[in-house]
Amino acid sequence: MDLDNIECVFSSDGMEDEEIHPHNHHLHQFSSKPHNNIVIPSGIAPATSVHELLECPVCTNSMYPPIHQCHNGHTLCSTCKTRVHNRCPTCRQELGDIRCLALEKVAESLELPCKYYSLGCPEIFPYYSKLKHEAVCNFRPYNCPYAGSECSVTGDIPFLVSHLRDDHKVDMHTGCTFNHRYVKSNPREVENATWMLTVFHCYGQYFCLHFEAFQLGVAPVYMAFLRFMGNETDARNYSYSLEVGANGRKLTWEGTPRSIRDSHRKVRDSHDGLIIQRNMALFFSGGDRKELKLRVTGRIWKEQQNPDAGVCIPNVCS
Ligand SMILES: [Zn+2]
Ligand SMILES: [Zn+2]
Ligand SMILES: [Zn+2]
Ligand SMILES: [Zn+2]
Image (cartoon, rainbow, N blue to C red; front, side, top):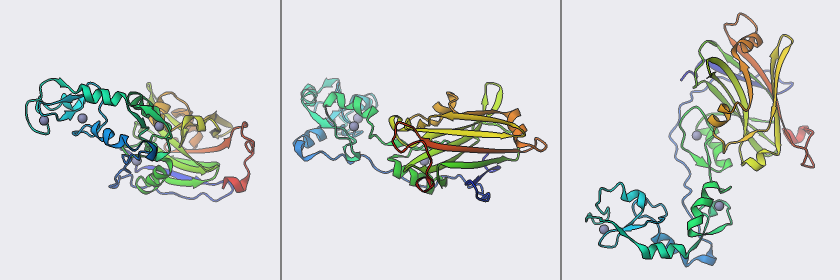
């Protein structure tokens, strides 16, 4: 990756530019926060032991039909069955092709809380529709929004904010306006891995500002966009603008931040942000076109449907 010669300089309005030196974007050892401590509400406590019965003893996922068993009665899920080469993982006997219909029937009669109960989801579902809901549950953990590496960490927003700060060494800023300078010594090198992430904290929310260079068709471009650290419905309460320019020309972008539920890649590929052609970017950089030096200014605001929206009150925003 070509991160070492990218420099990101940030300054708040009215303040001196503050040089921020590139960090080593090495990932430190960390572990994801466990989310599998399912708390069953006391009202449906008898379901707990049945629920454990329906956990595949091999992979610990919930089992859905067809549920299999060996001649000795050891159960396992259909995914694991395809992996064990016809040997029961528990007793090593030949597995055969026996369905455990009794357990499938028991599952049908169950109502269980969403597995994100401990994260705040109050919903209870028949066993077989639980899985469907969990895939779209609003309380499901978010993926790490860091884009430059394969990071498999998931969690709620406060957890991910400290993860970005501590493990990815991402710059954190408070305020709803920003003035960001992107400096790159060799603008001829444009490859997919070139990007920057900054996190902004305002209106009690967190926003990810992405900046990157990539190849759009045959043309190298730079792109900046904002993602909201929260779900899509809440993201629609905010708008943002980005502006870049010099020498009497400027490009502006106004949009709604995308939720981090949408992957960084998805947002980028839908071009939902400020896109700067390289020629323009070099023009905006001034000088001898040998260095990229873009000043991106921006603002985040709350949408009008909210009573206290529209105006940026300084002591609220910073
Ligand atoms: Zn399994
Ligand atoms: Zn067995
Ligand atoms: Zn849920
Ligand atoms: Zn991460």
